[in-house]
Image (tube, rainbow, N blue to C red; front, side):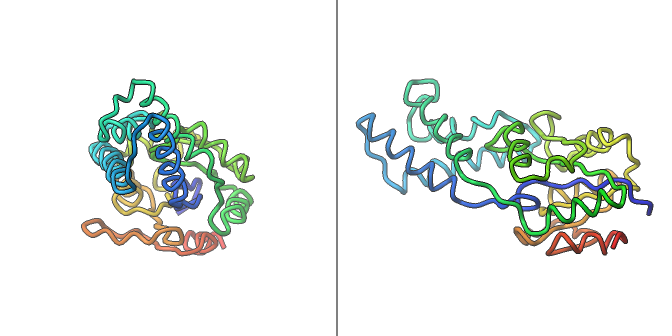
Length: 240
C-alpha cells in the first residue's frame, strides 16, 4: 500500500479524556441550585448527568447529531428544570463551561508521530464525533497543544452532519485531504464500533489505539492493527 493519508480520532486517541469536567459540573450545578433555593444530592446529579449522557449515546448510535448543549438540557429537564428558564440556561452554560475550564493534554508521542508522518509525505486528518464541546473549541485545543499545524483537514460530526461509523464522514475527510483513495489511507481510533467499523466500511486500513482506552466492547470486529503507543504506527504502516 502506498500510504498517502492517515486520519485520527480525537478523544482518547489524540487527547486524554478525564472525568474532571464531570466533577466540575457537579460543583457548578450544586452551587446554582443552592442559589436558586433548592438542594440537590450527589445521587440526583449523578442520575441527571447519566440521563444526559444516555440521551447522547442514543443519538450517537442512531446517527442523529445534535447540539452539544442537548445533553445538558436533557440533564436539567431530568431534574425538573425547564432548560429555557433562567436557571436552565445557567445550568446548560455551566455544563459547557466545565468542559472548557479543564486543561487538556496530548497522549504520549502524538507530536512526534505527526512530525514523522509529515516527513514521510503523509497527509494528516481528524475524524471526530462531537459530543459536549463544539468543533471550534476542539481545534483550539489542538492549536494550544502545538499540533494543529500538522493537520491538513478536519472532519467533525457537527460540521459534516453524521457520526462515525457512517462512511460519509470518512469520505469527507479523504476528500478534504485531496481526494485520497481509501486503499491508500489508514484511520487510527480507539473504538471498534465507530473507528474500526467506519474505516473498514470506507475501505481504509483500520488501526485501533489502545493507549488511551482499551475498548473491550464485544460484537465488533478487531482492527487490522492494534497499537498501544503512537510511535508503533510508523512500523505497522511500514513507515518506520
